[in-house]
Image 1 (spheres, rainbow, N blue to C red):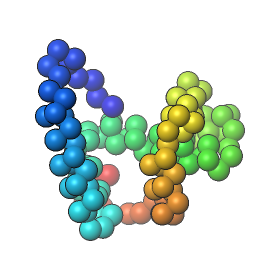
Image 2: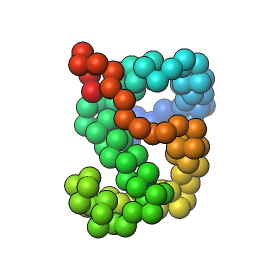
Image 3: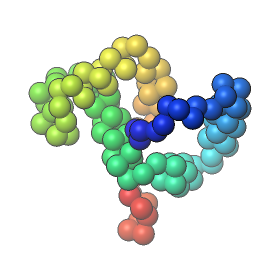
Image 4: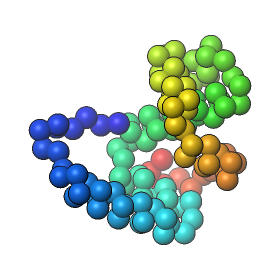
Length: 115
């Protein structure tokens, strides 16, 4: 994701309150189109690209694809695949929950959408 200044960190309680409010807002999203609007406003195009690749790599790893297949299909380095794999091994419960509840198939929101 984007780099930011470490010199102006939020107060821990302020950070917690902001994130709780954000997560409550996410929980109120009614459908995938609303979710897309939120994340397209929140993230820059390169950040969306990185997120999409990470999700694709994670899905491929969970489906049992090997590093070389993933590297070739998504044009990413083995280091990137290894980082996503480490993330899945250390945590990844949220992604597994998402993958279980959805088909994770791509959808089109029309040509006027910012994807």
